[in-house]
Image (tube, rainbow, N blue to C red; front, side):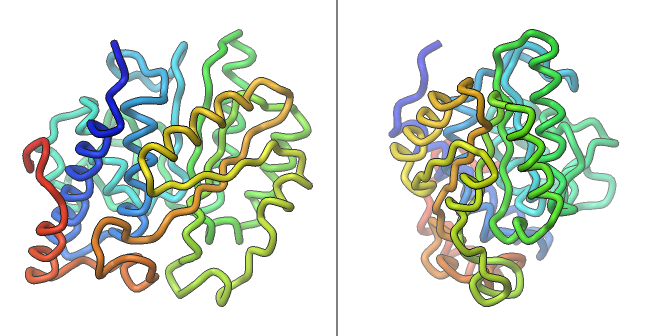
Length: 282
């Protein structure tokens, strides 16, 4: 099957962004800012770059697998999984409701296809990805493990323990991405706790480090392709992905204030007016 064109991926991304703002508005809760900022990454990964097989099982054998560590951006994850065929798009309407499989942070107890770990307790995802990538090596697979983290999440010490572990064990089938938007729940990362020279830090920990633009579909596709080309060379790969929180909706862009706030009726209408409906709303 041929890969979608950049234009087709952009059309999918527009619909995903519509899903995000509608989902959080409907229940007046959720995290639109980071979800909107990472939409192009998720669409590129699931619709173009990741080697996926039909159906879903928790083993994930003989396919690439993905873990979301910053689980609060579940709206974008759920939308992309539904649009990619993991479950019915109509189920997006149950987001954050009682007895829904689409909880505010991804969970595994309800068996939602595409969700491999419960996440949202920040700092833990890279450790899980390490184990999964090592398991693939032990199984003789040549598939990749992808993990997405937030930049504010890097304030968690467990991340750096996992970073040391991955480099020491030469887990070179692992591609980690940091959503480098410079924002976290309480404000800019530079004000809450400066991240310093992230590239230098990851390189010092023994990783192969690259940078990419996460808010341009062509560039994020090229970025993931580059990350894949760096894999298999004895080092885990870190992709520092520059994004803007709230990208795609002008009044949400670049501020932490939309980290975990839902738009009201007027704001929803404004947001939807900026995003083309391309696949049909749920």
